[in-house]
Image 1: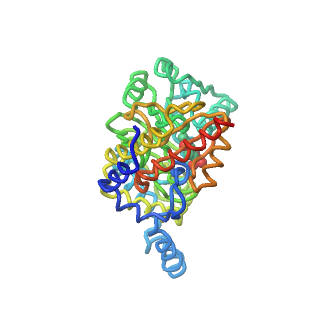
Image 2: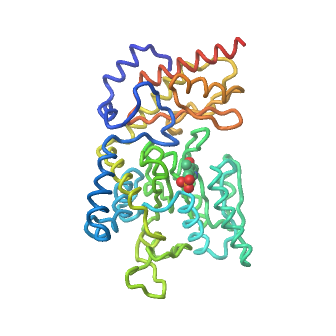
Image 3: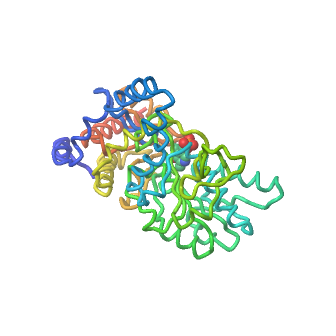
Length: 401
Ligand SMILES: *Cc1c(COP(=O)(O)O)cnc(C)c1O
């Protein structure tokens, strides 16, 4: 999509999310295209955190756990995330990191199907996902069980599901190419084979509409600091479909997942619902920040937000398309990609540095990939247009050298 600056300005005037821009702290001389790695600071957050520190911790001390409702925060934040991912309010818990949550759910699924020997993933899944699953398989095997991680190419993945599969673990939106899985057929194939399905929503949540229950997905995890804007190292979340709550047990059987943690019983008895997937004491300040950031999604129509993100991507792309040496990795089909654009170029590292010198922040993924995230809550169409123009100018210069 090639448009003029005036058309971009018109899109901004007609943008239903335009008012949300003022909710974010974005330096005036920066075009921020890395919200898929770390979302920007919500302006209301510093005051909220200051109140949490001085008014709650500083004032109430340990009584903050009850008087300020800290103990309920993992669930309260889960309730706010649930509508963003098509989950029930009692199916989501904010906890730990995405990596740790993936491990907990993958182990719980494998343990529930002890005769199954395979966890299946995509060969280009996000590194930590592969590492965690491999670590789980290694542990199980070292302890005398049998569990392998099988990595299949995307196109062969569904056919690779068979009677040995305990779990199919995929990332919904690919962190490099932005390609999106259609979750329903994967979940259906897993279910038909008697296996669990798990999706990592790190690059989806807050960027694209997700309907876990509509798609029949069993398990999910995701990240709080990308499109949810929860801050650096924000707590992650996990989803377990209610039909599995009684059957799955966390391998990290910490006291916060106990039915009655403050009974201090020597015997572990898991909490009845999603709470059983908690492990240790939750990071309250991080949860306060994430809860505050999630307020900005209240009343946001995610289908509409995704449509805006697709348009931002297309405006950016329109300035670059056809220039020599560039290869787009993201699919053109707007229904099947997330809210970032990835392109390959031999000089990707210096192009990203050249953009950064002009206040345009994207990111470089070795060996030759440039990635640009389009957080549609706060970005303007003119910024997508301007960033595309600047990158195109750099590409022309590079081409002439
Ligand atoms: C960002 C991301 C993670 C991050 O994992 P952490 O444990 O929170 O560091 C995991 N998986 C995917 C697919 C991601 O994009």
